[in-house]
Image (tube, rainbow, N blue to C red; front, side, top):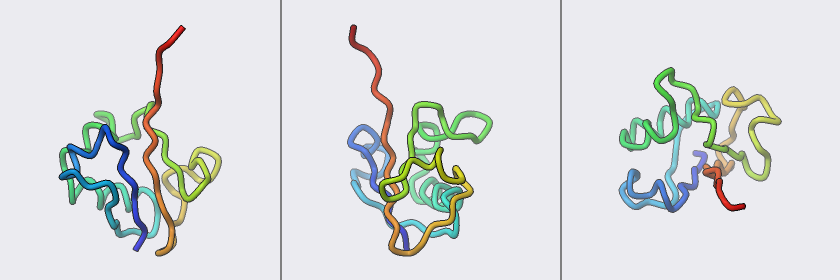
Length: 91
């Protein structure tokens, strides 16, 4: 099954886990499984319409999913998904 790496700021909503094994044929399925396992993550990943929040960046292995098929991208059992939160600020 694919694994999903949780960034440090979101680990408190995932029981402190840094990596979670997820099920699904597509990234969207994997995210549904992730939020079923850890419901407190849902509000931090999805907006009220069920879409990814704009500051949530998802990578499949080393590829930004925005340059693939987005959440419809197919995942394999050996894939690594990573949530990378955007960082803003500075001068």
